[in-house]
Image 1: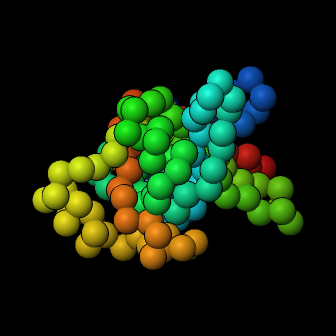
Image 2: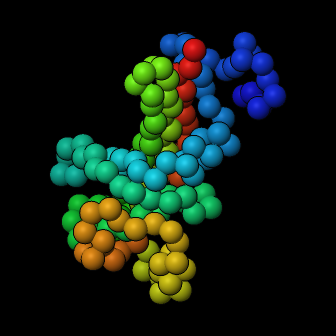
Length: 146
């Protein structure tokens, strides 16, 4: 991978010409974008739902109410989280994909700590009291730049 001091001509590009982002750059981008999508399989079909999250160390954490996201986390299912940003005028942007496992947070001390993090559900915060964390096992990203 390249570092921040490398000239643009030395970027690591994939076969489509997209810049391959380093692990550190993927983490930095996850830190600046508060909304993403979580993907998982439910009853044999793919499901992708929006989440607003925060990066907590190496974990992605978000609140949920009852429903498919909580059910999936309670079973420790594999998930992916995708976070993107793009500029429609300049045709530039990036996408980060985190793969791992979801877990329902039930430890009271951990819940108390997470409750102090600056993340609030955009939709129905009054109904989203459960915390879910994604243990990230793989983190990759690409950037479209000119």
